[in-house]
Length: 178
Image: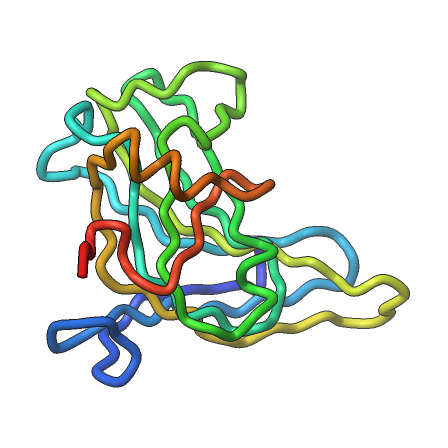
């Protein structure tokens, strides 16, 4: 995290899609002008081989603060691959977010090696409103649940095209066939 910024994940019994708990991403951003960030990284994954899958799916309840929310994967090469949920978190409606692996963009222009994922991270970077002066501070929570790698058929992907940010936003899981 940048100086003055912090984040944590805590269990939350109220904001969830199923089970007993969801996860609250608690974040605080403080800046007087330059972009700052905070986040949480999960390394030492049980199995970093996600080659049997073609997307990550998660339920997200955004906070409406419109900060730059980053989902990041790192592969064995050390390159970080990102996709941004910034437009989505401007709203406050909880929805399913599906991210095809093809939507992740490498910071060095590489290709994501889904057979060797070493880290999964959620970052939040500051976006200061145009014309704002002084100290910008955001202390908020975004809720997550059901984060998992999924294998979606070509038919499902064709019926649910990605938006301009490479995301598929739906009211129910793409795996829910009811």
